[in-house]
Image 1 (cartoon, rainbow, N blue to C red):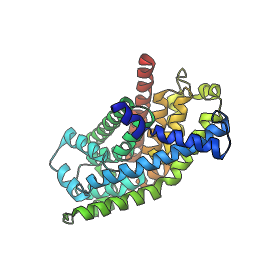
Image 2 (image 1 turned 60 degrees about the vertical axis):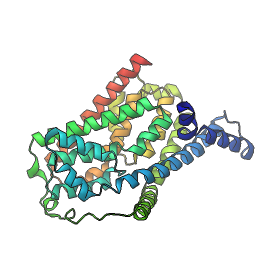
Image 3 (image 1 turned 60 degrees about the horizontal axis):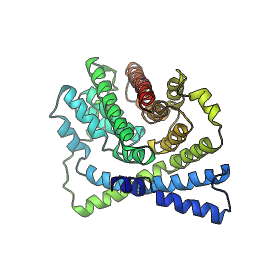
Image 4 (image 1 turned 180 degrees about the vertical axis):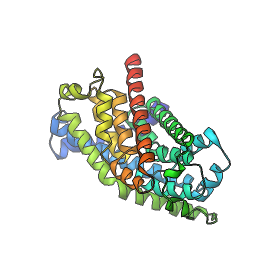
Length: 332
């Protein structure tokens, strides 16, 4: 039963079969040809991601409606030390935000008086790990990989936030971030209809924000999957290359895309023989350290704190990449 649910609901094998018939009957293309396989990959992955994304964001947003910033601040305020960092990282997993949209919440938490390390744990976790990306990871790879990704993402967020807390970097946050009072409003109790309307708006907003990155990612993935020879990719990012994780992380940092746009690229890379850790390092670098989000963050924190944040997350991503490659080498 679980296998059927995983294959038909998450992987949507029925959709893959329908798209295959569409490509063969409408375009008169051989599904095993490069062009036919590329069109199949693009249509199938695009539809699958948008269906899962819409359903999952709606469900997650409905749950999230019970945890507005004000309530999140009150919950976090009851905890201290590594417990607060862990809770902030876990709360970040239920907020379907990209790195740029997480920064206003980061400012709000800072102005509300939450410890700086706690806000950074949230800032790392929120774009890196969310429930929708976990389901999509499971639909593309498997549940073991999806759960492992969540665990390492949360651990990275907790460790990063804890180190920043121990370094006492409060003086490197711009003054205006402490002056905002945007989280002081009362919590409104929403009715079921209000929560449904909120969830619908979240779906519209997030799909509107990420659709082009999803299509770009799927398009790049289809090209990698069907047009770039496996030996070329392996020569650069092969699992036997010690520098593959470093290259994937460095290449990912300047880019900007939602995790949903990087998943098809990671899928195609792994299919071509690239190490799982290498592909995940690329995903993490794009989502947690994108250049636009770092530019926004530089307006909120000073250069020293920004530099420490980038170094901590980069080193963490690289360690995670090599660890996943090593584990996959032992068990695959």
